[in-house]
Structure formats: C-alpha cells, structure tokens
Image (cartoon, rainbow, N blue to C red; front, side, top):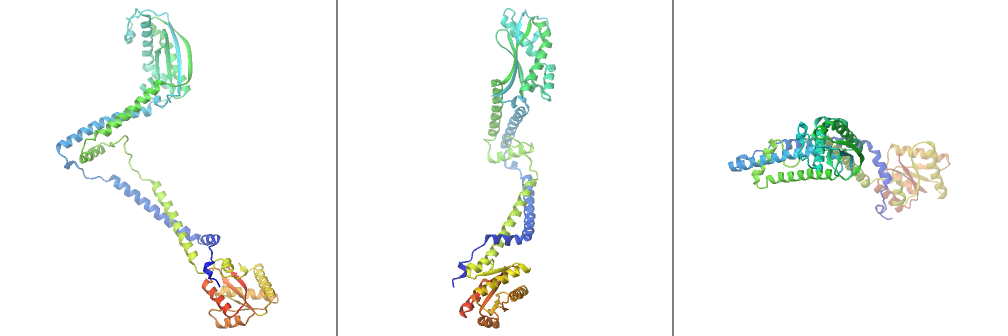
Amino acid sequence: MNNYRDSLEIDLKDLLSFLVRHMRFFVIVMVIGCTLGSAYGFMKENLSNDSGNKKEDSVKPLLTSKEIYEVNSSVNTYTTYFNRYNEVLKYKNESPLMEIDGYNAPKSTCTYVLSCYGPVNLNNPESSSITNINNSSEKTIVDNIINLYSVEINKDDTVDKVKKAMGSDLDDRYVRELYFVEKNGFSLMTVTAYGRTLDESKNNLQQLMQAIEEKSGTVAKSVKHEITVATTTSNYEKSSYIISNKDSINNQLKDLNNSMMSVAANLSGNQKTYFTELLDELDIEYGIEKAEKHDFEIKTVLKYGIFGCAAAAFVLALIYSALYVLSPTLKTEDDLKYAFQIPVIGTVKDFDADNMNIISSGICATVRTKPSSNIYIVSSYMDDNVEAIKLKIIDKVKEKNVQLKKGISMITDFETLDNAIASDGIVLLETIRKSRYENIEKELELCKNYNIKILGAVINSL
C-alpha cells in the first residue's frame, strides 16, 4: 500500500469553511488587534508631539561675542527678507490680477475719440496733475487730456464704484491695477479693464465709462475738448501686462527665498544652530513658509488601529491554516477516496430519515454487489455520537433485510478484530476531524494482514 501522506491534498474550500467556523475568534482577535494598534498610534502621536515641543539647551554659551554679533546681524537681515517675502506672497495670494491667466485673460476695452481740444487752463487746480504742459503741440495736449482722465478714474470714488461692482472688499491698489488708460493713435484714448471673468471685466469697464462720462466736465475745465465713444470690445486674449506682472512677482519670491537661504551660508555650525534658535523665538521658520504646529492626528490612530485589526486577522488565519494543514485527522471524504483508496458509501450529515435511508441504501447496494451475509461496522474513533450513528444505520439496514453488526475499533478491541476476521466484510465509519490518519492506516494494515474485505466507508460529518 502506498504511503497515504503522498496522496493527501489540501481542499481550499474546506480550509475556508474551517476558518469561517472559527469566525467568532477572528472577531475577538481583530478587536484586540484594533485596540492595541490604536493604542500604539496614540502613544506614537504623543511621543511625536513631546519630541517636537522639547526645547534643547541653547548653544549661545559656546559662542564668542563676535560670533553672537554675526548671528544677530544675520537674523536681522533674514527677518527683513522674510517680512518682504511675506508681503509679496500676500499680494500674490490676494490680488485678483494674480488669479487671471495671462495667456487667456478676460479683457474689455473702450476706445474714445478726442477732438476740439484747446489750450490748458493753468488756473484750474486739476491742471497740476499734468506732467508735461506744452500748448504748442496737439500731441502733447492730447497726452495732457489722457493724463487727466487717468487721474480721475484712479480717485477713491471711482475705485469704490469698481470695488462695489466686483462685490468684494479688496485693497484699493488691487482694484487700480485691474484697469488703465492709454493713448492709442494720435487722438484716441483707450480704457482697458480686466476681470477674473469676462462678465467681471465688462462690469469694471462699465463703471469706468460711467466715471469718464461724469468727470468729462471736470477734465474740460483744465483742457477744453470733446470726447466720444468709438468702439467697445470684450474677449479673451493674451495679456503681456498680466504676464509681466506675474513673472515679476514670481521672480521676486524666488530671489527673496534665495537671499534668505544664503544669509546663514557663512556661519559656523554652532552659529547656525543659534541662528535657528533666534528664529524660533521670533516664530520664524528657516525657509519659505512658517512651520505648522504639529497637532494631534486622529488619522494616525485610525491607521494603526486598522493595521492592528488586519494584522491580527492575518496572523490568526495563518495559525488556523497551519493547524488545519498539520492536523493528523481526517478532513474530507476525498482523503479516504484518494489517499487510502477506500470507496465512500455516503456521508452522515444529520439524523433525519432521508439521510439515513441514503446511507443504508448505499450499504445494501454494496452488500448485494459483493455478496455478504455477515457484515460488521467498525470505526477507529469512538464516542457516543459515533455509537448512535452505528445503531441508526443498523436499524435502517435491518429494515431492508440486511444483517449488520457493530464493533468498536479493531485497533484497541481484540473481540472486534476477531469478529471482523470472521465476517464477510466490514464497513468503516470514520469521523471528520476526529479519526486520525495513522489509525485508519492501522485498520487497513489489519485488513490486509487478515484478509478482511472492506466494503466501503461511511463518513461522519456531524
């Protein structure tokens, strides 16, 4: 007979069923793993906070007075750069102009025709804003008129109207950079307004056109002229004005950051440490941005809790899988079929009449196929449940006019062995997860040695 161990195979479906039957232990262990993992994450977070808040001893006593002076000077320089950097960064973050895509900018323009202009009235106080007074040149007179309109639309009352139209409480300088007046041609004046959207640029231009209409009389007191709307347009287009402004801001930030990083370049190791200490006292981080305070992270606790839960389930699955594989007991009916080459008559799943009739019919069919009158049913594993099954089977077989007697175990009971030898054949009753492979092998060895005919086996899965 071949070694049964060479033919045993692991039934993954049965293994999964085995794990599912122990699910309550998985739940308990997973809860414990989750609790331990969360506790570890909690302690890790607290230790991280403690180490982050721990203040080390100052290195100042290790420095000379000259070295301390150099560090203080570097800190002052760094602070100047840092404050300027934050000013520029604030502008970048708050200015609407910085939000606009310079290569697809919402832009609205209105072009005016200036005509019938006369000399500058120097007696009007508004004329003081004109930077280049020259009444002998029409070109210069037009420049003076455009300059006066530029002054008027940049006054607070006009800025307030544009700001109100934008629906936001912006700094006045942010509003003023969204529009401008320029000369276009010999006697044309163009008003340009930008916005974060095309509608916003249109609204801004509308406010500016209204202001120009209202202030045209004031400007005419300084320079006599007539002003007429020629064209208005609104579209998306590339804006060199916005692109250059954004590039300028980004370059300033880059240059300031490089300057900050180079401040401590010539300091010694201890000087740099003291330099960082002084910055910490000023709540200034050595770098572009201030360091955020490390608050307690619940995510860390959850992460380690989930990890602990999964790890506990995985370890328990490995343990149970190892117990399943290494167990020396019968696992499935295939073990008898293929490892021991014993035909399986049926499987006892419960004590209902249908199941017992199927088992008894299988035994009777086997007896008639292999004519036998003195049949014995034995088992390598014994308990009350096994004995009850034997009695049930004997009663059912008896109803079909087949005589069946029961024994205990041929391995441990000599009387059972003698009766088995004297019988015409035996039926084995083996129990899942109870009958041991080695005992089944011993039964088969006895059958081989004493020429005992094995009619088949009944599997007990209760």
